[in-house]
Image (tube, rainbow, N blue to C red; front, side):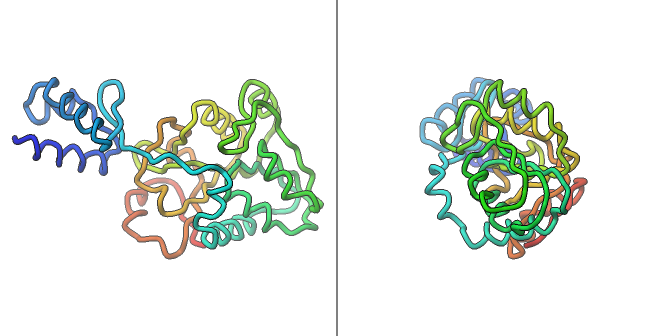
Length: 250
């Protein structure tokens, strides 16, 4: 097999599976593992993939900062936020993860609704200043990229709260590798919140599908569902047809 053919195959497998395991691919193609590893090194040097121990992952472009992300897909996120808000009932305890999509949930909540909103995002807590909701703000080390608290203090506080609905923010969604994000500590906090929640939903814009970020948060089966734009291409959702999650259009 020519080098160009191997590299094309590697790119196709990354898009389909979200990862390359060098030994597995070498065995499949009846090639030496060194050959596959050399291909991966060269492709990584050209910015085509990310090398990891034992193989490779797709490149996930660096996210813009929080302020810049507020301008991305604003109308779509507004619709997703409004739809999510209709799923919330008075008297519930909900957790709003950080992120611009979840900020739209806070803005869409009826001001007179009485419920408890827990968040580790000071920006989201500020959105609820004039609401009747009780707001519990989790503290810790501020991860400024996402404007959320992380660390031991946050994990300890989260462990003492039972949550009816958790609206989880992630940077990537993949049918095999689940939902993931770009920061190690932030991923740990998200996992802790999910463990305390009866149901977890993700507001998912189209660019997050078929992607993998470095730090896994949960498998698809760990989620109750996704809230997606109604105009999203059906092909993007087909890989999730056999999963036990619902796709809610907004």
